[in-house]
Length: 326
Image (cartoon, rainbow, N blue to C red):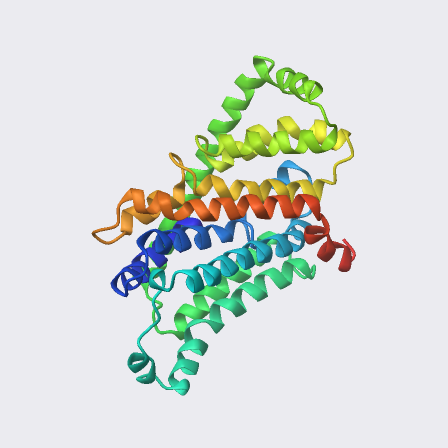
């Protein structure tokens, strides 16, 4: 999800933003951070993996992630609005003459053709899961069929496209399975060296009770995100902390949302930040890795702010599952 979004925006939006005089770091940061929102706003692969690790319903996690995901997106929007007001040169508007060249009717037609179909597809997939109509695997098949129909209606469905999608899907699936198998080998070695006992003793030494334990886990996940891929963190680090926190009465759904929100930063923090190198690979000439690093820093800080808000107000994540009876 992150790769597809960041690469697409990097190819389509970044050259235009740079050409129009947008701050390079800001443009890169927006693309990287917004591309990573797909890892918390359903459908999210992180949530699916956590549901397996933590033995929770995928639908419950999808419902719980709506609040934190929208909150994080809102923080990004507020930051951009404030930044635009304080520093208009960083985000210059489209010239009035160019805006007048496009009528409202033309904008409406473009919106219906380009924006509405993907939104309908997402609503259909998520709605079928949250509403209990379909299991996640069944909803995935609905999404695949819907994507094929949208592509066909747009006149872009052909054998070449279908073959490329099938090949890329196979590659991604094989890559994920290989990472999972390697992670299991690493986890076995860690447990064989009594790493779990070390983690347990560290928790016993922590002052402050449950809150300190949760923040210690968040700090460890954040630091691991600099060097370890998020799937490995999910399958190695989370099972080490999880039994201890659950034994202390921590709500597993709330904890899963904290973990998911925290894992967002692993896509933006060097040297292993996937989004950074996805964007660098497709960025136009003149965009340096320094611009990208500089651009993501405010968004990493906002992820930290969102984490604190979610910690202080668990109902941000729990209200929707409770509202629908889960």
